Image (cartoon, rainbow, N blue to C red; front, side, top):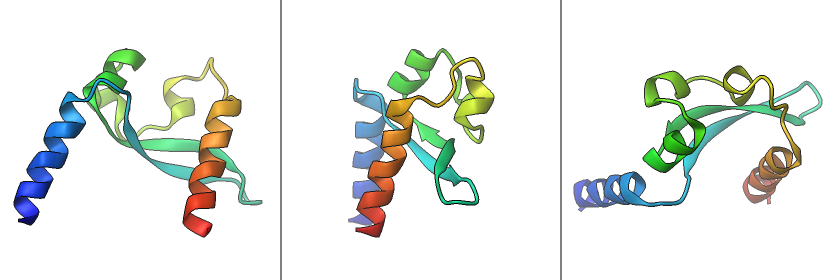
Length: 87
């Protein structure tokens, strides 16, 4: 059953048209989200970013897009995730 679920998840992940990525949030000493590291990304995300999986995964947003400082959307994303985790 778990194996089927993993296969179904991977199929959904690989074929969905929406951008989706899994990331690790990076915080400063005050706990504020300042960046994030890409752990996985679907083909739509890779296509939209113009990066390959090998280039993107394991790197941070600011490493990949240094000319685009973290904007309000990225900061809100971090706050939203923290809010969901911390309740």
